[in-house]
Image 1 (tube, rainbow, N blue to C red):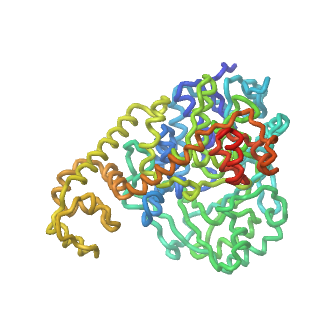
Image 2: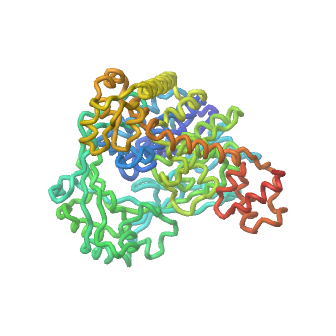
Image 3: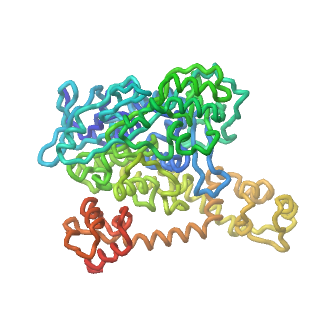
Length: 620
């Protein structure tokens, strides 16, 4: 019934979809197995992509030839560039999406991807022989063989849904859990644990009073995520902001004795940076209100996502508390919020390629590795799909360093440090964030992806055009003189110092309150010289000029840090023989088996003195 595949991807969430697309586009005959073809790429929680640091990841996925940025742009109902008041390293794109359209566009793109087949069934086990995975076993009893398998099971592995005192098996509301895989992997020697996540109630938007809320419109300019020139929506839908109050909190507290979290029925650890509403009012008892974002689910639906009100309290408590929030007095609830507890596998059991250390040709991506968030899952899926393809062809793995991409930071954090709670990406996790901006992801990554055969010729040509244009713009700014009489009136309006003699345009742009787009508006000769360049190219040149000193300093830091990254540790290195290492260091180094001294230095519990000792024993 089934041919032998190059790659089988298990699960069609954000990780699975990117993994399947990457492997298939690279030329591998790929099978995507999902329990429900109608929920491919479903946005299980909030209908949004991007945000702080997450937006950078989506742009990196797009630069690498992935689909997430394209689908996001095609289903956007509102776009905002967050942190515009800060430096470009902190700018983070975020889109509110049409939930149904997002799923439809993803499925359309996958169905139009050559080399990709689909099958609806549950995978209950793996085919393993001599320490290598060669296929899967489905719930209907089919054995499907492949050269490599990628597991992207999301929250479905032995998932349990919690609402108050009620609990039942499920990977999402109204969808059954996946069983069998965890038990087999544990038998094979893997370590597993439990995590928790949650989602808020959904309500009928027609029952809300928006006059009691603060409107949050989208940006005037929709920058988008994909570097392709895609059509942007002509209009946007607003979101709204309201707040809880002490009365809401008091009602929520009446359900604490029936809360699965406080009653101890949930063993898994929840996300620290996206806590439930009951966790927030318990941990931050001194606060008399918490922000609630009222987010539409799409263009043609009245369903509203109540962001900030994630909860697993009993339905009656959720309902009563909701109707005490300003604007929600007459709210009708479509469905209650709930928590879900699921199995994951600590990611220290993986290599940088996301292939498991115990079983060859078996890859993990997404929430199975302890992460939370669509974006974190999608980028892992992309890299797992690339590396599964390479594994099937005995090619070297593709590994992004911390200085290459946020994707590299995420994977290095997981492999080196592991996680005891759902891992979420933040800009603060990236030590080279001046280099890893959302605006230059294409300049950083597209050439690599094009060399692999993933990013197409059009993408590469666009990057080459951008690079050449930025160099030309910088050259013009470096050579053009600006006379006092041309700009002093404008500089006075800005409240910045005027000039007494002519000055290079490049030097003037270094002022923090001077923007290149405004210089072009004020100076006719600059408008004539730069008027033919795309806004994207002008902004990129402006950023490079303004932050050139900081960018160069960060490049020097990368160069110094790379010295440790280049010092490889032999696979056979025996840490237990080094008596001068502490017990914790020996134990963690033996368990994680870092590839380089750089990775060893980032393992939690490894001190600089431990690294020095390793250098001595390695003859350095």
